[in-house]
Image (cartoon, rainbow, N blue to C red; front, side):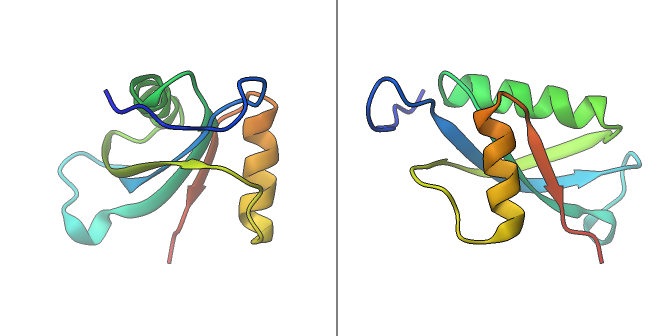
Length: 99
C-alpha cells in the first residue's frame, strides 16, 4: 500500500484514478473507453476498490486502472471542478472520454 501526504488531517483525501473500461466483455483496445475517476477514500486500496465497484454498478464489464494520485487542490478545468466538488461531498465521479 502506498501512503500519500494529503495535507492537514481535517481535509479529506481526494484521489484521481486513470484507466480504461469496456462495455462488452473481450472488447479489445479499440472498444476501450478512457476514464478518470475522482473520489474520496481513506487510502489507495480503498480508492481502487470503490472505483471498481462503481464502474461495475455503472454497467462496465471490464476495467484497467493504470494510475492513481491525490488531488491536493481544486482543478482549474470545469469538468474536473464539478467532479472534485462531487468527491468532496462523498460521491464518486466517473468521467468517460467517448469519441
